[in-house]
Amino acid sequence: MKFGGTSVANLDRIRIVARRVKNEVAAGHSVAVVVSAMAGTTDQLVKWVEEASPLHDAREYDTVVSSGEQVTAGLLALTLQNMGVSARSWLGWQVPFRTSNIHGSARIEDIDTRQMISRLEDNIVCVMAGFQGISDDNRITTLGRGGSDTSAVALAAALDADRCDIYTDVEGVYTTDPRIVPAARKLEKITYEEMLEMASLGAKVLQTRSVAMAMNHGVRLQVLSSFTDRPGTLVVDEDEIVEKQVVSGIAYARNEAKITLVGVENTPGIAGKIFGPLADGHVNVDMIIQNISEDGKKTDLTFTVPEADVDKAKQLLETSGHVKYAKLMSDKDVVKISVIGVGMRSHTGVAARMFESLAEKGINIQVISTSEIKISVLIAAEYNELAVRALHTVFGLDSDEDA
Ligand code: ASP
Ligand code: MG
Image 1: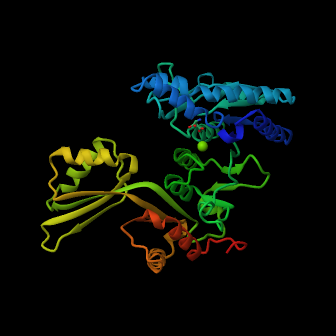
Image 2: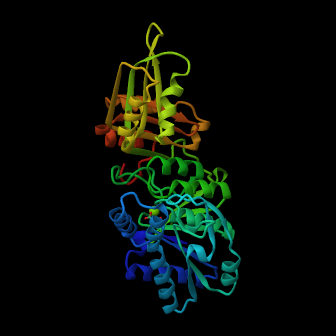
Image 3: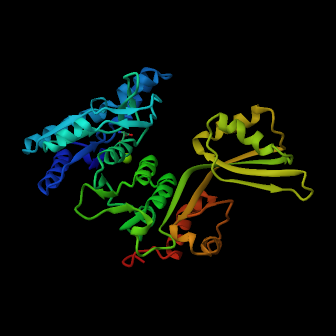
């Protein structure tokens, strides 16, 4: 069982969490719990680090920002004990939860579960601090923001758990963001691959890495709310889903920016010269289109980068010296809309339907990219809600009550 920051935001909520854990124990299960820091705590800790030292030592950053989880792990263990449930807390180093030494975004390398398993066999609930681990040189590490989802999935895999329940403040995974489409539906099941696309395309319910890890290790995931008793969404293998939808969800990402290079010399190697410096500067390029002029001598190149990196990307291109172009333009007022579904592998016409319904609304498509189970388009940000609603309806996702 993993509980996110809003689920452990104060002692009352920690008591609710403890009751849920107690119920599972009473049902005869061995339970390992992974907790986040109280809501807002990690943000505050990050701020303090930045104030203390703008160019901080990443090892000390990890020492500070990992501390929120220590508090909640101890408090939950205490609360369980007060309810008559044997429990103890585990910090990353105590497990030990071994990671690489890339501070701030460490990779999990090995989890030695021997001690924990022997405590579980003695019917002691294990409450592990999420988000943290220990490097080879015995320094505290953290897994990157949102990392306690990944802690939980990794621990579930290492313990060979029957299930990994991720408790959060929403009731599960929705067909799209219910805040902009009231007719959005909670999905009963979703495949790992779809969830992976949804998570990386902006649905914030799970850390992307945790989904990849669950997929690779076959961990059955359930996303559910700690505030209600309704069933959540199961993230499972494709063959577990009987009634397959062609499209399972619509995602959108507002934090994209578009860069266009006009009049680039059209010679072999030009794309490498453009994208090489961006890669060296750790700017992640997502969608790309290239167009050739009539005489074939010049080309226009358009691509997207994270909005936060657009100035850096422009600077890298302007100073690299290798790329010759007539004009560089950028636009932050764009949004990427994606339709996702494993059913696309066996159904044709999804792209056509998507483009037609956007056209009907008078929405211009600026860039397109596809994968086997996803089609993404870049459009002007002002059409975000209109587009998501239209696509949600067209692909039959609206719930009966609200449609
Ligand atoms: N507390 C950490 C964060 O806010 C880790 C987590 O909550 O998953 O990013
Ligand atoms: Mg989270």
